[in-house]
Length: 324
Image (cartoon, rainbow, N blue to C red):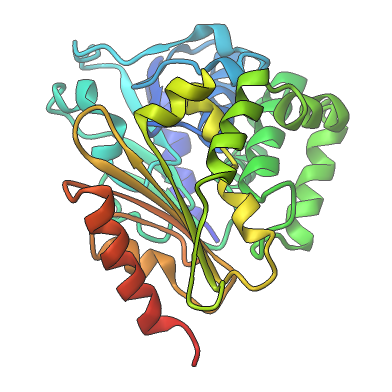
């Protein structure tokens, strides 16, 4: 639950500024994009000058989001000193991207729901009990009576829907459905938004799934499952990194799987790991061993270790937590 004093501080801060820049994490998902655009549209409806950026720009699969055309790639040139920087859905300031690092400036505000967020901004509004940053923003917007237009509601709905796995993950509560209902009342179209998120893939994504399914590994009596994403995976399928979103969930469909993870070789030489847990294993704790973070049931990391080196270490860490 958010501290009322923090919400009041945000209200005061926003009333004192006219220019804003909103940024989220690299490899943005539905919650990152939805929260970024929802906040931008709400501030713009109040007459504010708002810039919306992301290190990866706008991924094609999220072009349907209202206001998405205004989102641009993060510039290495720092914003004006009087432009308030608000970070949303980003647990680690390093995950804002290389261009942001060149600014040599911390965000003024961080709005997030990751328990691993250390509070790196001057003002931090973090609700680790919330299933999505979109829900945190909904609470802020409605408390402060900021504009909740149909476009704002649509973005928040997508953030809430995607970060709860279409309302399937453990942190989904009665409150989550209450927020979703309020967003639908405000103009979010659940049918069209669900189709845009889950039923609008390119053929290349199916070809990517073919490559992935042919390379799935199991261990510990099928309680651990994982696969690799390599340059060859993309070359054979014609897919792009944006189209890997959600593939890890197929591993979790196996009833015996307690932990699932994906390892990807990145162009910069690093290895990206994404982990999910059914409940018995704290994957955030594991990812923190490698400088990552997230939630107990969903976390990620980036490391200089090779994929095979990381695979070995992850399996060792998972084995320590798996029940006998």
